[in-house]
Length: 244
Image (cartoon, rainbow, N blue to C red):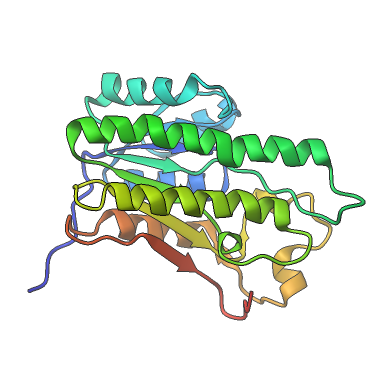
């Protein structure tokens, strides 16, 4: 028996790191699918432009993801504005890599605050709400680097290993409930995370066609459309030619 995909129209998603890259692409994609959105990032001008592009389906909450009060503010905004919250897309993140002698230690420590501390805080705030209503989906942005590590990317990979560990533990905790937990694990994607790199990852790895943020957004819509009895704890998405 084939089960139809879930109609996302009217569902509400909170997206962190929404001002660019995968977060921005997901917002546009899911607004087109009929979802209502609460969007957050530090760049208010970008959020306003994105909300306009989403055709009035979005509410913005500018803020710094490391602010301990922000997750509750996001949840409260969703509940007050739309009367519900169905999904948290825990997407905000930074990328710092490099050899020991040149890596910026302060930027590494700030990355840990964003990628781990802030992501953990948001996950728990929203899961407590999901548990109270016995429904919801936590979607975490991980990375192929959350499964494999190589020289010079250890700090970033460590933050994604942390996301993987937390997600699997939470998946097990909620396995017998309607609440879903998923990690999406992109391979090489073209986003602003690499804008300061003199040599982009696709070039370094010889990948002719890296994944786009829009393609990852399609995968996110697919995940959210799955029937209630289907769980996809991890989705690894890689471009042709990536062997790492």
